[in-house]
Image 1: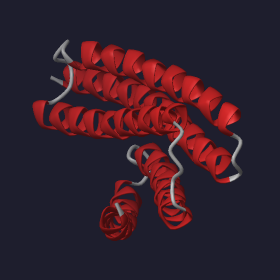
Image 2: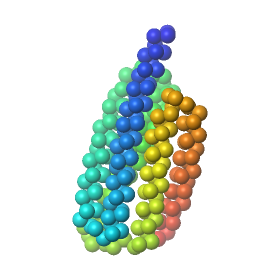
Image 3: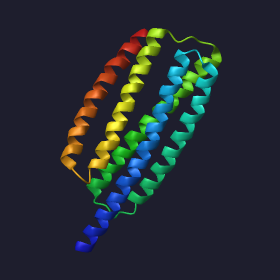
Image 4: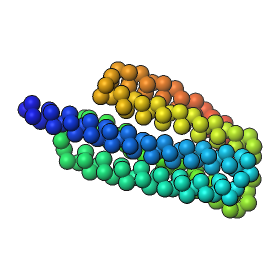
Length: 178
């Protein structure tokens, strides 16, 4: 039994480390969405469209790492409850990258079609993405803290949730403008 706990703990730490790699690519995806929005605000449309290629590249790498983690978790060497929590983390973080990619694709399409995004809407989008970047930075720290200080990690998730609520409010403002 003690061998199983040791193997399980070691594998769990490996998966957590791989999860931080995944979060890093999610982070880079959102960073490039932020850059894309700033390029649009500066009317640098060609550069903005190039940023979509970066968004796409990092989102695909996040997907690749997600598949590796799922493969590792499917081996069954981690307690089912912990496996479920890690899967939820990976899938929700992956959703962030997927939404960033979809947003970038829509922005690229708007540029290609010659639409102007109203300044007020663009400012709201930039603020939302800036807060999402903060959330991912904090999430990376929270995941890193899981093995060192789980209590601190939990506290960080509460702060992340506060930012998420703020982003939801800004999103509603943006939807009103649309």
